[in-house]
Length: 449
Image (cartoon, rainbow, N blue to C red; front, side):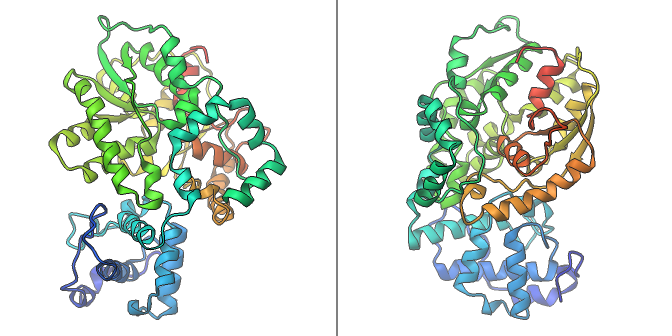
């Protein structure tokens, strides 16, 4: 069997590269110029390289399936079938871990970007087969958030009622056992509009424009509140412009690049005037900050979009910059805690180090780093056909969490937190559910929740 994470990499098999000369490289996600034949040719080129490398062995379901098929076909990539392409694509939930693992990403001559290859396949599948109404509904997160918030009590009751969840599973295809983020009766924008700022523009040393995200706006609202409280505690002026919308990360699920491009342009129009006034863009949710930093400049190539990406910060990344400048308040009052911190995949992909861990350690906490995927990944883990698989992935993160014997669990992603709780990361001995690091820091400052 070839299945080994330390199998000889491609660099020891130069004949493979020679065999692939002449194949067009660089299928672009937003392009509509490729044919299915082009996409298959590029995919086979990449699959052949993956066969020689295998560094992503057991990284995610897509690579398990891919390497199983390659072994079954005795490394004859030409035997890969249409059904194989589709299964590998559907099992990809765009965690992007393989991009960081891969030694052949641009600017390497092999130019491998496996996540965007899978996104191109999702777009191809939808062009050929269409998208189900369920999948088209699930990417409308702003609409779902507004409606869920308007009917929060009723919607939350329905989502916690077993027989109704069974009906929803039958009608929509959302697994009845998938725990969900409940809707807040007061949205973050409502809270923001009626509050009184504690840091004035005239006294602020720094200025931040906040992108809360749709999850924070309508469900995980306390993360947004904690973000504002901690920033203002540190003398940072915070503004939250009207007109923001979902970052469009969910649109990857159906390859809806048109919406992603429109969203990138829309947010550039909103935030560019603030950048010109010296504001930085701060985001408390990793998937959204990843979109601003990595995906928007890819989708819309322009100097202005590059500047937006460069001025975008994860909230804990931003606070650690304040620490570096000597302007972060260290007036923490909380007693020492043992925290198991699961770093989300989309934060790892930003290559900023472990800023959330470092920030929590400033409070006196002992923090154990857990570098395992939670397996929720947007709506993927909520779908009936992937729920069981997502929970198996989550168990790989839960084991080291429990082994560290923490009294608190943390994750920057609200969906990862939800998944970890459902998978058993917070037993009764851990008195609170998984929290965002910014909530832990807010509490360490002694600020009211």
